[in-house]
Amino acid sequence: MKNLFTALLLTMLAWSWGCQKAEPPKVEAPPVPIDIKSGRLITAGGVKYYVPPERGSHTDGPGEFKFECENLRLIVSNGKVQVNGKSFGTVKSGDTVSFLNKGHVFVNGELRPPQP
Image 1 (cartoon, rainbow, N blue to C red):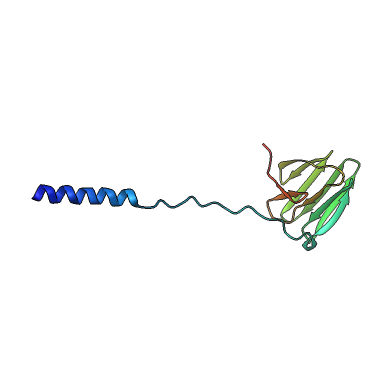
Image 2: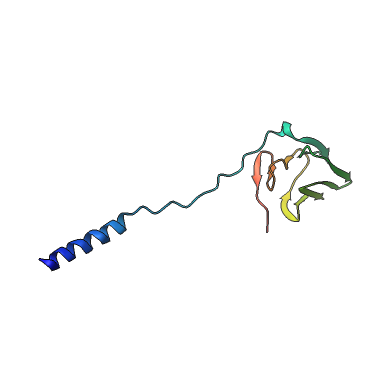
């Protein structure tokens, strides 16, 4: 009887461990574009750049656009976008680029991941 009770107890214990729900991995929601009206619009080379409203400086010349403020250092050279030292691909005339989400780049409303 003692062995039957022990076997039943072990079976129930094993069953309860197997039925425990594992916590699903936490998935961070992707950032959504911030309303571009909350930023400043600077147009250079036919591209519309929405940058944070805080004080900053910008320069643009043939094939190059630079913007710098407290948390953002943006360089676009011959259409190649570099933000805070990371590459984000290229842009062309007619594109709209938003830098209003800190740490994220949106091109024509689509999140653009950094490139290796």
